[in-house]
Length: 265
Ligand SMILES: Nc1ncnc2c1ncn2[C@@H]1O[C@H](COP(=O)(O)OP(=O)(O)O)[C@@H](O)[C@H]1O
Ligand SMILES: [Mg+2]
Image (cartoon, rainbow, N blue to C red; front, side, top):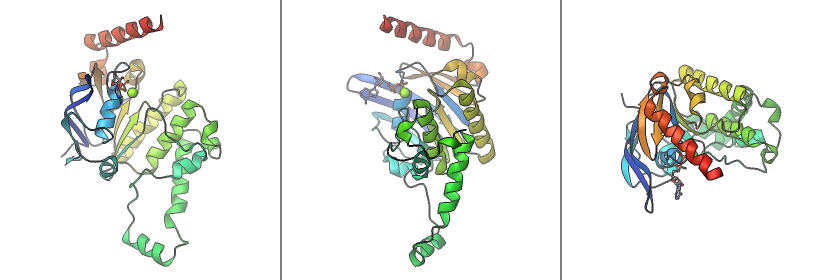
């Protein structure tokens, strides 16, 4: 069986800077995988290359066995890939529920029957009620149903993240890429969101690749596997137990923490 995602020899240069350097990893169908690594190690750039936003310098990307290396984001989405961004992109003049009702592009295949109905009965939208219900239940799951009718411009950074996750789940993705979805979200709720994602993976068989900056946190969230990046490369991949206590991983994180402290001084 083809993996949900296969990244092979991915390389991305920005001018002379090698942001992603020969990165290879798979995400199997029904697998929940974490992508971690110090700030600036190339995690978001890897997502941008996978989802077709950035042209790759080298390497290939396959989604459910389809080579999508040179495809545009909207073409790749058709194969079931949905992603969120590290910096959320919401419509600030719209309410939370309105934001979650805007489908990520090309995610709703219309059946022949639905198309005929739309043609004959233009006022009748059979999906609308169901989608509204889904949107509300997603907000319930994320524990923010009370915010449904707030303008997103009134939300905190963490709350915006939740609306964004909700939106990405509306399109029934088969492969979901989440870029630091719980950054700025309070600890207990962040854990619940991971729990819910785990449940969603187990119940629906979708595949999730999630970027998380906090290593201690992700080690305790029940992901199946973790890919650790450092300075553009894959440092190691394995189960949380294998990653925990790995010397190279600890050193990469300590080194990065040291550099961040120096920058602050
Ligand atoms: N559009 C861009 N142009 C130039 N450099 C970039 C761009 N995007 C990211 N970079 C650089 O690439 C490296 C990796 O960045 P990024 O993928 O955002 O890291 P991470 O998500 O792991 O924090 C960093 O050095 C960053 O400054
Ligand atoms: Mg990033």
